[in-house]
View: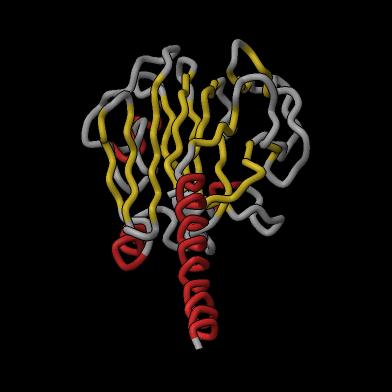
Length: 242
């Protein structure tokens, strides 16, 4: 009788050990999930490719730990050189540094759905503006066109961008679990926005994107860097899943 009870007791203890093991696995997964991952370390274009294209070559170059876009003098009609990540992301914090040339314009996208149906990443991916506020004419078209803005949707609360030719420290957070997004530029949080739902729909409805099929519709998508025809540099690109 004692032996039988002991065996039954041992059997009852096994599920508890299994449950504890599962809890430990979950904890490990969460720890990995919250680690920073380097998307660009300055030594190669590994992890990136041309939107709807292939391997990255000129007019992007690697210089002093940065990826630098030099607009081609003789661009073929219809040619564009937007970069997108190989990986897709849903809830994340993205950090990097960017530097724009005098009179320059570029942008940082997320939620890009890469497909031949969409000829440009901005057709699906919302954009955070990268701009020389002092010289580029887009800065005269409204606060929501200035550096750091959620383009044509939410203006920056403060203008903390460094002058053209100087590096800016940038953070973008997108979290669909909390329906919250923000932009931090040079240490100051300047933009806060919803990322889905009725509030997001209202922002889109009040923007130029109101009739754009697919715009902002994909919670999971690629990160993109824009070819807007001006010299721009990006470096120290990292991402952390939330």
